[in-house]
Length: 139
Length: 139
DNA sequence: ATAAAGCTTGGAGTTAACTCCAATGTCAAA
DNA sequence: TTTGACATTGGAGTTAACTCCAAGCTTTAT
Image (cartoon, rainbow over all chains, first blue to last red; front, side, top):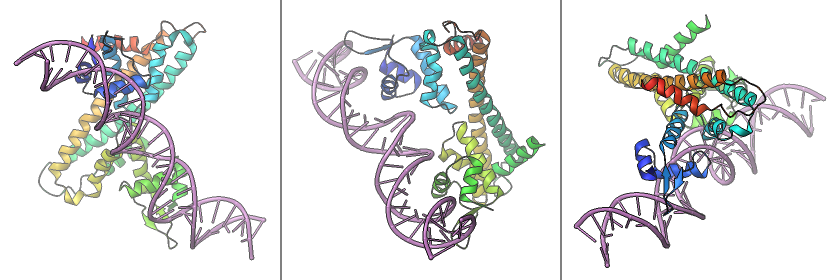
């Protein structure tokens, strides 16, 4: 079991953030030591990694809480509800992937077009690269 | 040219948001009408679409401003600077794509495992699906 | 000609997600 | 045994990104 400071360090977040998540029902400590210290197990570590990843790709804590509640409240949801929720989130994720693929294409074009020399970057533009990509996509 | 309200409606954002972006140097109106009204052209529309997409995949307005400044300040950056910035952003984008691919896998497993019936969703869990994916990846 | 809808500005208020603080308790090392 | 690092709580403060408001113009419809 990890104490709050150990877990925080492992995850590169602050102890305040962990307490904040507990207060806001995202992740409670696995248990408490006799002295009242929070204790976290390996599953808590994995849940936190899940939360951090989800945040990095633009999900809000509220949405993440929804994702997690599938596990937490599983006895109170029907299979059909879970399936429809998951399908909806899947379509969101697919959209995000498509948008990122678009950025990726733009950035790759930009990197390729950029000679990397000392001269002014007058011909380098994310947006004009993006416009090319848009043009390709819209065909 | 669009007036602010027209552009806002086209993009499903508020006029306040457009004025906020102008105040924070993300996107100024293309020009002003004689009466002082903001006017936006097609390029402004494309830039806003870019901003909205970038936001949806977790970039902050500050980061987006950095991406846009490649265009705006192109005369004041060297090609080498732009290339290195773009390469760095590209690696961020690749990370985000990898994380989303992980979510996608989890959600697809979940959707597949879920029969979609009326019974309790006791065997449905994003996290346990995710753990499977983690296990596959870590091999 | 006047009302309604849309625009302007500056500035105040809100929400999410932290981040910091003060007062206090716990525990290991010197 | 006392110093230092760690933990507790409640609550205040901060930052980003809006969101709303008031007072006052402009334009369109009746």
